[in-house]
Amino acid sequence: MKIIKVHDFRKTNASLLFESGASIKDVAQRLGHKSIKTTTDVYVKVTKAKQDETAEQFAKYMAF
Image (tube, rainbow, N blue to C red; front, top):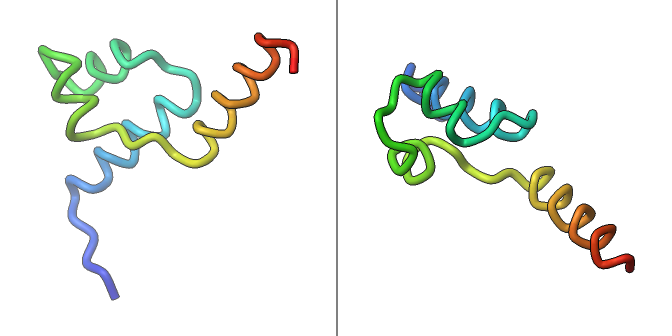
C-alpha cells in the first residue's frame, strides 16, 4: 500500500481546483505561492478529464 504524505493532499487539491475551472493564478494564490511557476511545475497535474475537456473545447472552436 502506498504511503500518502500530507503534501500529497496539497497537490491533489491544486489539481482539483484547476480541473474545476480555477485559473492557475487563483490556485497559486490559494496555495500561497509567489510565482505560478511553482504551482505549474510542482503542484498541478493535468488530469485525463481536463485533457478531454480541452480537446472538446478545441473541436467546438474549430467546428469539427
